[in-house]
Image (cartoon, rainbow, N blue to C red; front, side, top):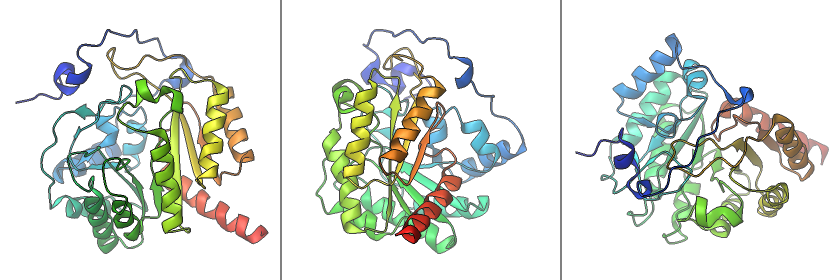
Amino acid sequence: MRDLKIPDQRHPEKAHRADNAQPKKPKWIRVKAPSGKGYAETHRIMRENKLVTVCEEAGCPNAGECWSQGHATMMIMGEICTRGCTFCNVATGKPQDLDAFEPGRVAHAVKTLGLNHVVITSVDRDDLEDGGAEHFAQTIRAVRHQSPETTIEILTPDFLKCDDSVLEVVVEARPDVFNHNLETVPGLYPEVRPGARYFHSLRLLQRVKELDPGMFTKSGIMVGLGEDRQAVLQVMDDMRAADIDFLTIGQYLQPTPKHHAVDRFVHPDEFAAYEKAAYGKGFLMVSATPLTRSSYHAGDDFARLRANRLAKLGQG
């Protein structure tokens, strides 16, 4: 049996890579270890419903804070990804068959946790003809049925190897926010995100708006991978050309020595400058801090996103 706790078995595609030094984190990037009653209760509900969370699989630094508040990002379609991105700590390999009961278990967990806002993401499933689009749609519908007041944010793969029509399946299920991360600047894709294509991901988000102009779209990148400021500003322009509403920018943290090296730790002042620039380019919502992740404070951010759109429409 494969043991995903062993690095060489979790990331067989990275086993041959030379080790990259993991630099000491600056004081602004350190977080407290997870603990507390709320954390334990969220952990129990996840285990009882046999659910996978990206918080655990990707080693998110904010897991302790979010779980203590009853927030967790559900990761559907298993814990093994068909891609081998050099930044990501999710296991790579051949996934198991889809679990037809998973959408119902996700919905039950959302109701049990009493979530006002839920984020649902997944591994890449290039082994499936529709990339898992129908499974996403079933999960959205199941959550809607059990928790009709809960707002739903999805963070999807790129459906790169699928027919264009699969995107319609997901959009027709009417999530409140459609998120797909560009992850980095286009020049770093061959090294950081070799299985993906920058302009395909950008076009995916643009098509969401074409299919449903009222749906909020969201995307994010990491910094500290080797990009420069001008490349980040160009990504912002590309996103706005695709009518993306919400931008997240966070510091890349290296999961293991086999992963892509941290080029530098970006100072909080530089994140503040990126946030100011992004608002100047017309984003409705921007989260740019060292610890920003796609799902961090997602519920509060969604409320602000919706309020910002209403304010903008009021001004028009």
